[in-house]
Image (cartoon, rainbow, N blue to C red; front, side):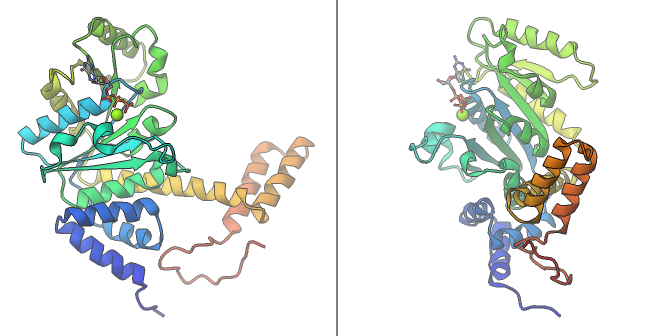
Length: 339
Ligand SMILES: Nc1nc2c(ncn2[C@@H]2O[C@H](COP(=O)(O)OP(=O)(O)OP(=O)(O)O)[C@@H](O)[C@H]2O)c(=O)[nH]1
Ligand SMILES: [Mg+2]
């Protein structure tokens, strides 16, 4: 039996059609829908997944203050000279409660506001309890459908977001600055691992070349085959930016056959959803939450191995029906309940 289309599905269909027609207001609204993640988001995501595939997603990350935003601005300029359209999603960790930062200031993108080939959007990472990955991959799909050639995601390298970014970007650019060379912990090993291209920005300052050399020697110590390029650039003086565009394009060519990026984003979305859902079920005081406490006690008493207890917890989680069923619901009987 087919239920009549829910209002959310009708709204998502309209949103999708306007998006595909390249309406910037529709894109802004679609991103809000996806970020807020209600019933309409689910319906919209389904439509988006079927059609994405041509935009190159570049993740730009690195410690605070190294010049990521200035670099992204210069990068956008260089892409526009090559007649490529570009959307920038800036992940902003600042708190909306303390006023945060003004978008134009934060992203340094003010000069592009009248250019229809550039779209800028800020994403407040504070609202994303389960991490950015719960909504950003779908937002990237929306921008992709809207027809942009390139998508740049800027994320401050604080917490998890830098590594998260690399999971749904086609190319990950890690930015550092001179002075970090002596204390390379500032660019943590975890970030180096995800870099496709490493940039030492502020190349106009002393020690930039030493920092780049330092990074190169660190990279040579690793046992992986994939050795990222290390480029020295100056975002403020617009030096080395075309080389960066070329390096990103070269790295992007290795990203797999068409559709690989969107598939990876969908997979990442699924992975994060599944993890968040397990968290949610364990946090409740229903079956899974109680099972967690009971099994924890049994592990403590040595009655069950940690591995077996883990399996048991996951089994309990799987037995709980979601409180918000997926959009089509399937035809499973609604037998089990949480209480
Ligand atoms: N000398 C020099 N300064 C730069 C360069 N690029 C950026 N800066 C300066 O570095 C400071 C930080 O720049 P942002 O672009 O805001 O750095 P960010 O990494 O985006 O900072 P967060 O978003 O706060 O992490 C600003 O004062 C910039 O003017 C550069 O190439 N050379
Ligand atoms: Mg910034």
